[in-house]
Image: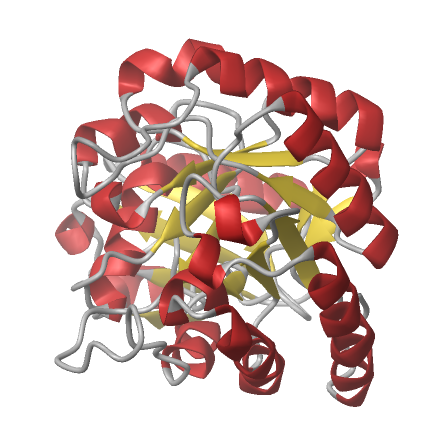
Length: 338
């Protein structure tokens, strides 16, 4: 249920209304809209008498929300959510187009630092790199683990870029204390115990869409995290599974404007995993801007031919630099800033 408050109502009056509503057993989230305060009620709202609420002199209108996701719903939170990393002068959402770049997996200090320096020079705002790698084959490179986390932290100190890396299970959470944003991969999008635990954390979360998940399922996964108290979430479209194996996945660009309409959370695109082909990444990155995305996450490797993971979809630093030059022109047309 949504309760829109009339303009000009005092904070004390709103606070009293919230207390009265919470005494009925529901949770109330207050958010500032463009011109008024909006109260989002979560829980068993059947106990709320709509007519009584509408009769309250503070209330402008009451709306029953039909979608199963509440806190992630734009009706609950009309203004766009913007994640700010003030210390690093980086953000995702709003007028910015955030670019997250780096190798699929951390392989060595030399590899990671050189890529970090290169992508920063080209204009990337975040460094990505996998320390723990979920792989289809048990014989594939699984990542450097704890050592990889240490290298990411060192690369962060040397480059100044905030770091994004994937968490695979709850037991690893304590290792991520110095990581700026935790990635939940496609395979873990519906790992509900993990999502609940991340809801209790204070870390920003990059939530990737499952390879066979609907838009509503992605939003419900975000809802799990938000229900625990953590609203710092970025949604990522990384391609869904289709019948044509020419590309690694099928990039669902139509979901970008749909998500922007349905939720206030930032939405980014992963053109590397979506296509699996480095030569397609520039075109899909430009398409992401046109579709209204808030950013992209791109794989960049200093030696893709010898990469231990996903070399075929990784750009070289020079290719990434050319991509950034092109994207700035497209972003300017769309009113975005890189």
